[in-house]
Image (cartoon, rainbow, N blue to C red; front, side, top):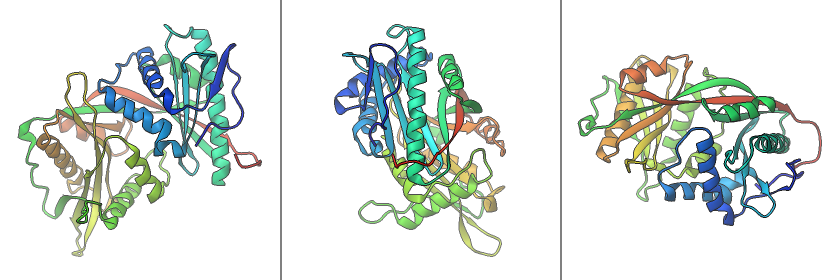
Length: 353
């Protein structure tokens, strides 16, 4: 998706436009600058980061996003807003603005307000095409990023959740994985001779995850095609990082009881690589059987086999299942925290955007 109609009201001498492939290097630098302003280190794997930004700007990821870059006329972009059509009634908003070494605080505040207003308009246009009457704007910020919190609050967002970003070191002794409890089997999704995953297994993973999180915070329906397309956009996507836990039920039936989707992480400053758990879910019918532990043991053992240094994941600090306690018991510790900020906007009748 390209930039939505209607340029924002930006600071004097600033202009805006849709990003182009030639902006990739400048946007990588802008991302570094925005991270520094939030007190976060820049990504260590520059090739991975460049590929990530290129995918957003000119790859398949751009098809479900509306984007805008802005900055002083004739200069490289100093702000970048992205509006992602995540699912019906759910729109993800991301904003990055250069730090104080490049943009004065009052100018950054004005630019952020203009870009977030543009993002809300773009989200309304997407929602109108979806045929929904309201859409949720979902933005993420590091817990220590005071300026992003200020911008979001001024734009009408509210802080709704805090997420623990946890990591566990991996050693050679973590492989092989211990045997699951009797009646539980963990395996990778099956693939055809060509290496393409079997559709039934992918559909089972999607269904288990949808049903596992139905009683969790902000749960909403994401269609199977949207789920698959979104995960495949990630630079770290690997089909052999998808697992299913099958459970023997009391009536003798063997059913999918849990699923885990992971990805390959970029190298950190030390050159060490890791595995990231994108999703782990246990179906209600399989809870209390050690399914989560078995899935986690499988992904940790796989990381050990690949000589990776750590396995990371995100968990709701207020998880109704107390998942953070399980992770701590299994060796995960919190590296930092992030926050979800939400705003709801109504869709007025109008022309399709």
